[in-house]
Length: 223
Length: 100
Image (cartoon, rainbow over all chains, first blue to last red; front, side, top):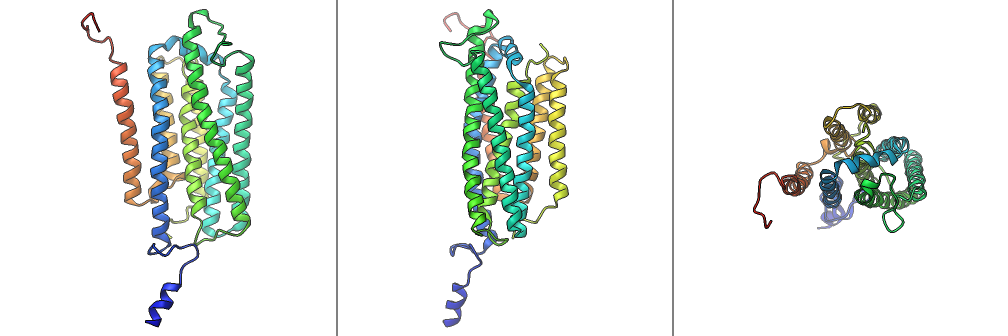
């Protein structure tokens, strides 16, 4: 009896007692995170569906808007996000190896890249504001044939990139929390679940941008 | 742990491939390919997303249950898009009664 009591009291660090071992606990967390990410895929999927429907209705109007999209900033931002995904996996890898300083360094780098993305997004939104491309009473469009239809595209543009940017801001908050936890030595090679889960979220946000960039910036580029 | 430690080389290669594909998609968008522009852009986007899911999100080392959930998510997203588009894109293809 005394033996079983002592074995029960011994846990790996970070292991909750209702799991068999750390591996099972991490698998459960991963599955749960993916369930959440699937709901996010459906959420963005609805907006991508709306975009496709309107694009098929007004192909010329949608193609004409690509002249007013800043492809350079869009492409740079794609590179920035891909780089931030790379630094995120490196943070997870550092956590697996128990390299505490490297975890913080890579998380800070990821956060900085996220902020670079949001800053460039701000520059783009400001351009749209100056050009009167914000949907609403002040909307103006250079091609009079497409004033109403182009407004639909810009509405979708702001809805989709806006929701994406909100996810980036949430991700930046999560990264800040991770950095604070890492600084307090909360992670070890035996337990680093939050780093891995927030990593999954960060990559998901990257994937959304991978689809947004060609759809909003590159379609109809040659017309 | 169930997750093996992946070498930096693998992550760096995936990162390089993603950057190369980004440059490719911008370059292809400048060519005059008609409808194929859209197909090419989406094909490259799907390849990039697959690289991120398989290597960065490490689905290749995930449990079968997680893989099933990822697959189910994609399948249901396909239902969402295919059913919505099969309605909108097929409108007007067949002559309907005048009151429609």
